Length: 206
Image (cartoon, rainbow, N blue to C red; front, side, top):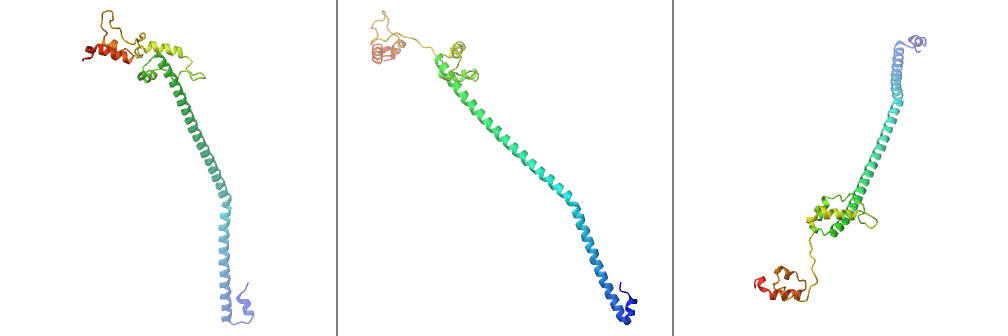
């Protein structure tokens, strides 16, 4: 280490020795400051380096959580879409089955002679969804349903009167009684009906 004694031995004057000592001290101080700064920087880097494993662990955990969330979200999206499709398919099949059963039920109502204006009302109170269709689209228990309709909805069945074969002209004398207006209007043959109206015009107000 450079000392004043060493410089004196070199026969240097006092002022020169002082300058050398001051310059040396300043240099040593500067170097020491640089060393201290370097040590502090090194300690800082070491502290940060010591944190790296913990930081890496946190990053790995975060990555796993993100992947798990993405997988769960993807699964939920798939389940939601599948349920939506299954519900739509089931509803479409239900509507198609209902339409087929309604058509078959209407055939029975028609066969029973029920006026069409009553069909919706009767089907509303009937177990249309519960019937089964055969391979031809007909209700398997059609005969039983037909009988039930005739019993339970008799007042909704149109009454039809059977008449004998029409004659070209109505009899001039119906056992000594004239035909009624209703009887004349039941004549299906147009010419015969008009002739009867003409012969009994008083019934029609002219």
